[in-house]
Length: 382
Ligand SMILES: Cc1ncc(COP(=O)(O)O)c(C=O)c1O
Image 1: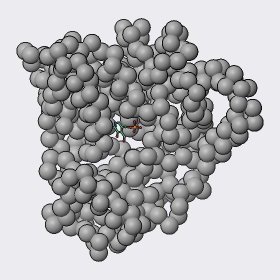
Image 2: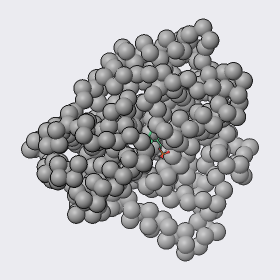
Image 3: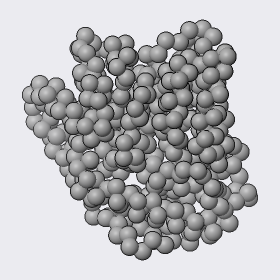
Image 4: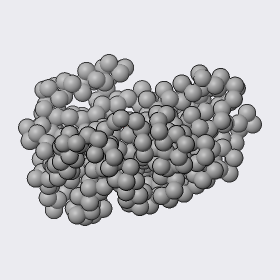
């Protein structure tokens, strides 16, 4: 196992009795950022009217700082509470007529696919799913999407992942965006896992990109960005109709009625914590750690680490042995709960292409010992 790596459990408030190997689902917020958020909430409770008066300026400052950190054009960078909102807003904006097709791949996040299905229902369109095999090379992913967007019956909008959820794979998003644009098809990039995992998460040329700050960037939950290409800015409206209705983008997303604005205000301090940690170097150490850890767990349970062309930097799949049957969402959740209870370990369980996997995540608090303990505890309970 990677030996030079020194985890930093002191920065977090995570329960030391639990093996935290599912950062990819809900993130984790550093202690210092939680403290800042608590101070901001206390300030709000000390004088609510004064707090709400102070927000426009503070939200705009946080927004600009986050846009700069992500390398996004500030004029097209709006704050949203989560990637699901970002995708919903984008789907609401693109024109869809009866008979139109919305393209997704079979790696699409389940709830995002529901969003595509909702807009298909509302507009009389249909969702078409492009299959991409788990072991697909970048060229194969691009070929699958390119041939679907340039098919004669055409596609009105494509929705592609930057880093897939259940299969923990980095898609060649720049090339996918270029292929969609070449076919004249607007493209929405679901970059929920991009911030914190990719150095430049905002792809040039995407019509819409959305990414969560509350996953790998460790911001308080409820902080995400939506980047809108120039040609869509006038038409892109925030999810809640409120006093900012007649402002321009991105400012019109800043005011979403009476709500909790603390996550947006505290998000830049998470990025500072990661900067101070030297996150890009830490991330590559963590990447080695999770690769070694997954191999260890796979060996212990008689499973296998599937060969992916470009695995997510800090997540790895371990295929479950065939005697462990996970056939639907309920079984997925039941196994997650059993592992949490009996192995005191938080992991994700996912199905893809009729196969079942554990998805293991690591961040700056993860140690080799976490994987060793998981490998020791799992065989008895599978
Ligand atoms: C690929 C992908 N898209 C979208 C989401 C939704 O994120 P949120 O619940 O923060 O909107 C997730 C969450 O895990 C995800 O993995």
